[in-house]
Image (cartoon, rainbow, N blue to C red):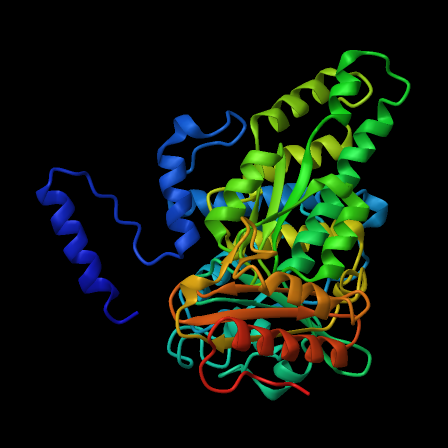
Length: 449
């Protein structure tokens, strides 16, 4: 932003006046700054992650991990022709230059004994091309369910995107998009990203467990005890939750309170490998101490030593930014998974179909009168509200609805989901009416029928 240099200089002067040592990394993304702080405190890093506390180290770690992951693809499975480029909408923000640098390094890696596997990244919407986050970027694409405006790209580029991604302005969120056979826009949001990553992780773990099926040693039972799970918020589409319960198991899906700090903490608390993504595309994977023990046990077991699944799992902690959601890290992880599974974006998108949903907000006199349970899936105050919502949901098969007070304004947010758009709209309308009548609503409640 225009005020950033002056503000940065003030922070530097203040810190130095207090006796602090300042390392200025220049203009970087938010996740790159988190990476630098994390790696500067290298005593907190697992031994298998080499400390790289600067921008060049960040590029090296991500690009080499991504490239090494692709090299686990058997020679006979390498596609005969180059893959289509991934068009990356950078929201006219700071991520643009870094996508270009990552692409430069990937092409260098792919050309030196790299079998040409590395994807070409085509960065669009850089700083100055258009207003920051305006009609472009992950929030615009995810909330509007529409493609980004490409301010300086040719019409050919805009119309021919078969594989695209949008970052937000500071590059900590990412969503993907494509077009279906009817040229209709298709969004792959944070829920779809979480599903893809969980599917891949479970596949690798299952492969190792299967390799030790006839092994009676204790290490083989240890492999199957790894807690791999996902954390979502109540806003996650119900179809994604059901899919992940099928892949991971009923008890490996946790619902946490809305907000990155809550889902991050839940992933750390409940799982040895915890995946979390909000629908807006902010998320990452956390690897706990038992995961590294898992790798060591697998490496020591003759049945799994050198196994391709083990090599893949061992590369992930270096590719994934565990400090915070990182659009560039997530981009490379998703693309690597699609390449290794030999899927295109359509195959990924067709894993499940989102249930129709409707969101709205209702103005109230005092939002503090509405209270919810810990993960915000049920209202506990006023005590008449949740029974009324339950009764409304009973009228729509396969429906789900929850309400929660805003943290900043006197409004109550409504989320309604059902098997049809008509039912989702009707349920949202009914929930808004209930809030208005039971929680001292102001003005007219929203209606979608």
